Image (cartoon, rainbow, N blue to C red):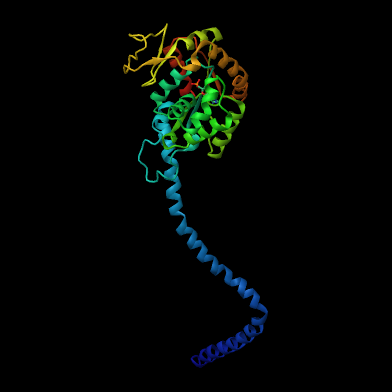
Length: 321
Ligand code: AMP
């Protein structure tokens, strides 16, 4: 008896349950169709989750290594100056992702009246930092020498001691700073010289995510400048500068460096210098408050010795870090 009872119970119970269940499910199916569709959605979510997991490792590896390269190079260097010398010191797996860290580029503007000695300082610093020294006066003189259309356009203004029109200068400079050798930074000497030029430079830099790092402003009394410039002699062959009074060549008219012929630039004649100073005060003078208001101006008394001024200049540039 004990064996029969459990067998009967176990048979009867499943039959009743399975018979009821299909009936209930069949009744519910039409009503729950939309619900089932939503119930399937979690299953679809599984696939995207797997895809996200697969994607994560690759992007993580690229940006992290790319970001670390410039940061570690800056931290490893003792100064901003040396960072500019070697903007990409360590070989990195993805050097093309962020090749130059545009926001870290050293963009220095040398400003001051003609003949104040800023060109000498700019050249020394450029050599020290390994950055291109871009002198707009030199660029124009080069065009003049080669009789290019730009040179011919600039000639009349230069010889008259006037500024070359903004459009011509800006085009020349924007083209130059886009060159490969400017990737680590550059030194602008003699540009900008007007507020519109400064605005155009700021706009061009902003497009690349850059800005001027500092404006190094050299000044001296006007009579000192006239004496300095009118005595200046330039070598036709190598461009070396000497001075008829303060740094004469061993043989008058002959360059010490290369034996080339030295001459007084047409725009270095005393009357032209006075004219250029007048033009400078009117056109470039407003850039002093312009850059001072922007916190970029660093001022130097250009009457000191070249080396003294240079030491102060290097200290200033190092402090930009
Ligand atoms: P510099 O050797 O810098 O004194 O330049 C020589 C001449 O080039 C100037 O007197 C101007 O005629 C011309 N020049 C150089 N830079 C500029 C500039 N930024 N804007 C207009 N003219 C310029």
